[in-house]
Length: 117
Image 1 (cartoon, rainbow, N blue to C red):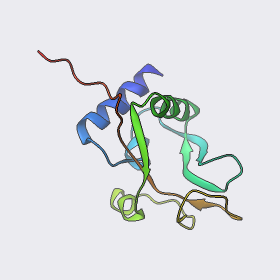
Image 2 (image 1 turned 45 degrees about the vertical axis):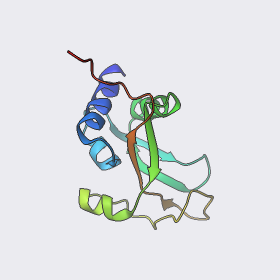
Image 3 (image 1 turned 90 degrees about the vertical axis):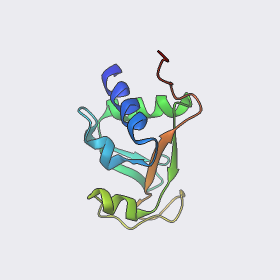
C-alpha cells in the first residue's frame, strides 16, 4: 500500500489538484474491479474500476486529511479521455438506477510538504 500511497501523493504534488480517477487509474495498482459509491446501495458511483488497495488507500488519505474530494464537472473527465457510460448524477444521493458522480481530488490540510533543503 505504501507504493500506491506514495504515487498518489506524488501525482497530487505534481498537479496540485483537480486529479481525476482517470489520472489515478494510470498509476500501477490503482485499477481493478471494485466499484466506489458515495454510500452502499445508493446507486451513485464515483468510479467503477478501482483495486481494493486503491479504495483503502484513498479512504485512508481522505480520512486523515491528506487529500480532499470534491464533485466536478463531467467535462474534466471528457478532457481526460474516459467517462463511465452512466447518466451523470447531479449530487450525491440515492438513485433508482446507477448514476455517476464526477469527482476530483486535491491536497488536503494534512498534505505532506517536501522537506526543505
